[in-house]
Image 1 (cartoon, rainbow, N blue to C red):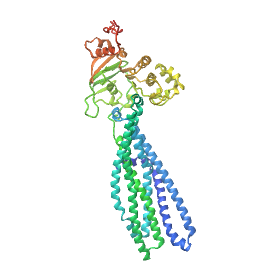
Image 2 (tube, rainbow, N blue to C red):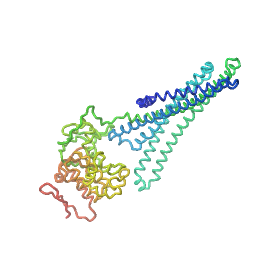
Image 3 (cartoon, rainbow, N blue to C red):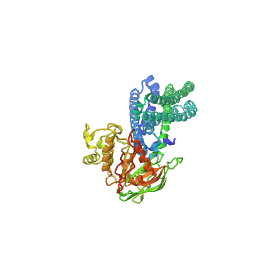
Image 4 (tube, helix red, strand yellow):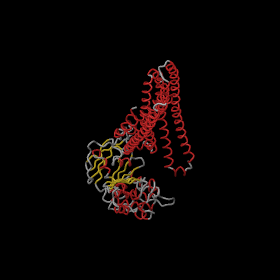
Length: 600
């Protein structure tokens, strides 16, 4: 019930609408009870003696009018409050997810997260928009009918209601079981979303490896699991109405037995008893509806618990209270004995004792074997993760002491896996500066060598490029990403394998664009191809989470047995074809710049 109470707190801003909805429900309940009461007048006065015919007729019409108005306004206002609550909850859930650190997303698939926003919140939407309204409205109607029963004959009313407490225990037990089963159903639906999303995202690989049947079998297994749990839910829900009908049957039987004796003794008129039975029968509809309301509430509580599980999870990257905005970068970025390990507490540190300083305007290259910790290192700069030990300082200020927005505003990122959005090219380029004028967007595209291919597209800069930019080639996507970073104009730049997956022609264009991007900026570059970082002011060689070598390209090559030299030689060997001549030693000019590698 804690989840339900938390859910209802979201309705607090809309309390005025709730008050009017409850007023409308009271009108509905009073009108319903009044209609039942008219049966006595019809049987005792209208039919036998034709008395008060018009008064009763007009009263019935008015009662139905007010009942209809009460039902309409209560349903509309409750649905309005419910939709507003669900909108606020969904918006908060989405914003909360986006505020989480990178580790949150690394442990969950996109399908699982989307399931919380769509399926779980959708389940909550039904109960807030409809079920709670039904609960209040039908409960008030039951109160009205109950008052009428006690007004006619309190003892008879007590006889009819003696069985009500008996049904409470099985209802409560079934409700708890229903909540657990509904949670399993939501988890099965989440798994189904995950399997479908994964197969759709990797559809090319699925087709290339002929794995359609295999993926289909995975989906069918998840679908079957969902079917079984849903049928269990249906079984539990379907048991409730027959139980209520059985209770109603006992109540009617008891009323007939007792009522016949009361009529025979003259203590009840036929009209009163008929009105009593009518009110009792009219109670059946609300009671049956309330049994289904209980089932819906249990399902919604299970979904709300899953939603609040995410909302109660707080990112490990926390902005300090009263954090100040970071001043514009101008001098140096420093790693001071940085240690990093994932928060699960079981993994060994990914980075250990990392220390270096990048002066303003320098290009710092980071190289090493796969899994050495290169990408983790640069992910610490924008605080996608927080350091476990040590500190990262920008112009002497610990980045944990400044606001995240001001820190990330000074960092531009271009990665190997280019992330573009299903929007126009112009809006993708202006993603970091939505208010940028068209001239600035085009200038950034020209500097990124993207203007020509954009102009050749059917709608130019207004061309929609599809999900993740699928309508563009790899090189085109990368140049759009570079244009986006250029337009943001951040003093700090991170390039993570920005050219490793491109063909030679595309790489040449992207390299030229990157040269324009890195001008007058402090750049951190991870490059798979070591030949692309020869101009770096410093190269950090990372191995097993430590910086094992630091220097310029030529200096590192000249060191005997250096890891950098071995990596460089391996890449040269990878590029050789059978029959090629042996590779000559690396030639280094006197001014310290490598001139070229020649074959003998």
